[in-house]
Image 1 (cartoon, rainbow, N blue to C red):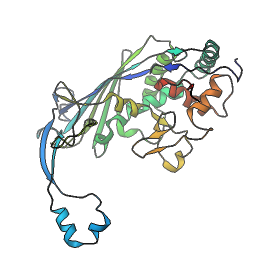
Image 2 (image 1 turned 90 degrees about the vertical axis):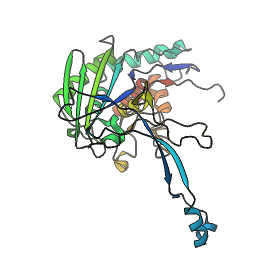
Image 3 (image 1 turned 180 degrees about the vertical axis):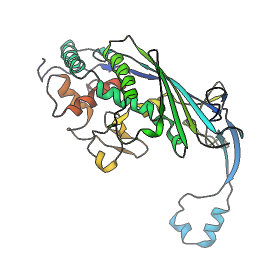
Image 4 (image 1 turned 135 degrees about the vertical axis):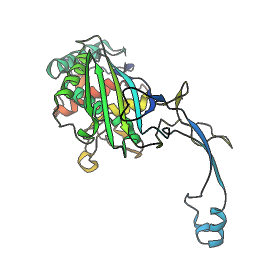
Length: 336
């Protein structure tokens, strides 16, 4: 085993091992969901909204100014997506490719570090076999977490997963979003295949996912929203994602949901929710990082673990390996 003072590389990168496709949205009826589906497109709306933003103290002190402000037209052109009047069910489909080789960085300019890390990673594979991580990834496939806003208010959720010549059908509401402690034989079978691929026992695993959410006739559904970098005057204020005319969800958004397995961060009991695997535990919609001290952030743990030090608890090892499965560039800056 390498010593603690092994030289940490300035060039170090890992390719992601969970590779999601974009998700494609279709409309159907619950009764005929396995027979008839129709690709969902986007429509454009031009609306007159109301002024609802926080006003300045000067305006708030004058009723006449408030009236003048709220009377201003808030004209908007936005993209929208909804089921057809005869459809009550959303179908979301995507594929997930699971790859092995996490014990080998895609780039590393320190032979000493590379040998040390490889030994540590192989020990983890031999002892743990990615079983805990694979179980959590499988659970997030079964519970439909990747539906995001489309999951809220759904009456029923059915998830059909195919991989390795097998097929499983899950009721998405049978699995919690907050906990991964549930034991389920079918989830365990799927998790074992994912673990085998991560360990390199399989050359790869291609997982096909079809998810149906009963949301109600003609209801609005939610593809990914595009980031508008340069919003000109008169341009659309909301642009939704579509591929070849089919409403879609970004692969990054699906991947984020699948790796939302971190229940080991310090504030978990207070937050009562898992967060996505990230080096600093960043949750962008909360504007907060949950892993910021040397006891919990990725780089401090990785520096110890990869150079032969034993981490305090097994959960820290799971977290470090999950970040490496996520992939990224982790080299040490030469600027100090």
